[in-house]
Length: 613
Image (cartoon, rainbow, N blue to C red; front, side, top):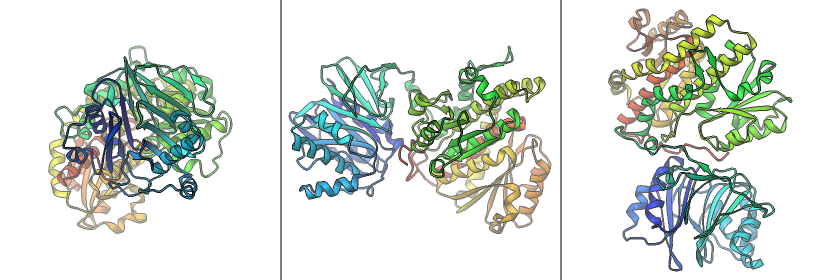
């Protein structure tokens, strides 16, 4: 989950490294550090806290055209200066940065201790850099060969970059399980966990695959090899499509707010080329080229984590309702540990914004091993999931920098809705009239989202009344129950207020005990779906003096009379309502966190891309 960056070329490395770390800070910000190499020496700085704290430590100009940097999400060892990366070997000759976890580090550490090595930090990374030094010295090997042999001895996940003090014109990088991208320009290389730090320098990138390593040398061609047997590989260079403006805040205070407001556009981008309304067609290559598999499907298992798990629950509703296929939704973090029943030709859908989520990747591997057909939904081209599924669909949400997912949630729902409609059409489980109506409703979503975003002033007023509370309850029914889960998660993530989402009908089976005059309850009370039941739940809350914030449709009378506060949204079909009902919940979480003075884009203890199990 950490972010790593490196540069080897003719430019001054420090500005590239420090600015790149700022762009990678969404991956972790417990601590950060850099090492810049010049004239046979290196300048090493690291500190607890964000990259801005690292900058404060650096008082003089750092020269050098080779450098590496790291922003950390702590796994082994508390966030402090000592555990921050880069880490150096005992001789101070090797410097290494690492994203991932070395699972057998303790056993390796015992061996190294017996051979006279000492350790300053609690990290698995310091063990790895000293293992490389031990193997290099013992066998009189080149750095690249010592790295290769060492990595064949470790168990776990990693993306690493290693530099030898005596040869700063060479960087060795390697990858297994954690993302690593290489930017290539004439006479220079850029290393990063994702391409965002170097897109203003080059559009040419290589996404290293698992089990690959590369030797980068100044003024020489890339040397790409397999870790296991040193077999030389031909690199495949891809052109990046990212627009620099997409990863800048522009006029917005925070990336999260920008990304909330981008959702009408991201829905259009997700639909572009897929929903041909004039022809009444939905075009998704991954479905069309595997038509028979989906027509004959007996069940579908969807596997995901976090916000993607909530979108999966909505996908369950959509696929069962429109395509009439039984669906199970699994937490990826639990899926691989309970010996799931997956048969050959079963369909498993894996969903991940980054395409690099470690638990979801483990689930993908298990599903493939059991012979399932695996369909992927992710946002990042070239990611592990994108490369290793049998078929899939990109969400086209663009870069999402805020740690709390917003536009990725709605774009995932949009793709799942398209899948459900397309498969339902193939299986004749949906009438032509309903199919055409829902296609037209889907086209109307961006406009209705834009209308909904205008309620932000109302939400700011509500937020001022409740930003001091310690608990929130979110209630929804049917397809909007997962929206209540997602709304509660957003509040927890960025404001640190305890919040729970529940099916409204379950309130009387426990959560109602929490209701008193100090408990705000957010109720999704749209006209489409279970409205009378929801009204009954609101009355139960009112009878116990709870404070009700109701998400209602325009012109609502009944729920509006009962609620303490109402947030009006446009009317839309029940199947598509989550795309609209989530907007006020995202804004509510944002405004409350902002009023509480929290770092909205960088909530404590979280990282955007969860690349460790």
